[in-house]
Length: 130
Length: 130
DNA sequence: CTACAAATGTTATATTATAACACCTGTTAT
DNA sequence: ATAACAGGTGTTATAATATAACATTTGTAG
Image (cartoon, rainbow over all chains, first blue to last red; front, side, top):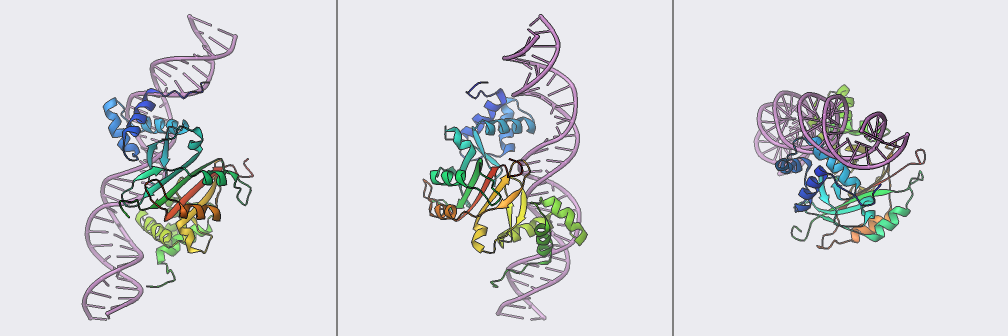
C-alpha cells in the first residue's frame, strides 16, 4: 500500500485536462478533449473522475456538475471542500475558511450525527460582475 | 405584488408529494407520483420545482439530485441551506448552525466576492448506521 | 375587454451518469 | 511459475436527470 498516490494512464490524462482548464469542466467536455488521447467513452472519464476525487486531486462542484483541480496540497481538503461561485460569470474559486472547518467538524446534528466530510458552495457576484 | 406566496395548481401537487415523503425525492419519482393527479411530463415537474425553490418551500440536495420540503418558516433559510446526510442510509436532515450563517455572510473571498446565498452539505454516518 | 405575466400541456431532445461484460496488467502468496 | 486477486481498460448499450421550444390557457391589472 503506497502512501503516495500513483495515477493510472487515464487518470493522468483526465487530471491534466482539468488542471489546464481555467474553469470547472463538465464530464463530456473532458471527454471531448480526451478523445485526442484515445479515450472514447464516458465510463472511461467517469471512472477516472471518481478515482481522482478519492485521491483528493480534483473536486466536484455539485451545483454545476463540473470538476476542478484541487489547488491545495493538504489532504484534509478533500474532506472539506468550499467554493465561491459567481452566479453571473460562473467563475469558481476554491476557498478555505478555517473557522468553518473547525465548527463543522465539531458539530453534531439533533440525531447525533457528526461530520466526516463536507461540501460548501457560496453564491454571489464576483467583483467584475457586481 | 403579493407578499404571501401563492402556489399554482401544479406547484401545490408537487409540494404536497414532497412534504408527505419521508426522504428526499428525485424529480422522476415525483413525476411518477404526480401522474395520478394528471401531470404527464418532466417539464411540468421541473417548472414547479424551480418555483417552489424560489419561493423557499423546498430545497434541492445538490449532491443527490433530490428535493426536500423546507421545515423552516424563516425566509432567510432559502438563501442559507444546510443538511446533514448519512452516507449509508441516505437520511437527510435540515440543520441550522447560526454561527456558520454569520461567518459566511460576513466572508469575502480573495477576489472580493461576498456571499448572498450558500448551500452546505455535511456527510457522515447517522446514529443508526455508525 | 384588453393586454400582460404566469402557468400549463406537449413533443422532442439534450445532458449527465451508470450497468454490464470481456479483457489486460501487475502484484502477492504459495 | 502460476494461480488468484485487485485495479485498470475498452466497449456497447442504456438509465437517469434536465431543458428547449412552441402552442395554449388562466389570472389579474389597467
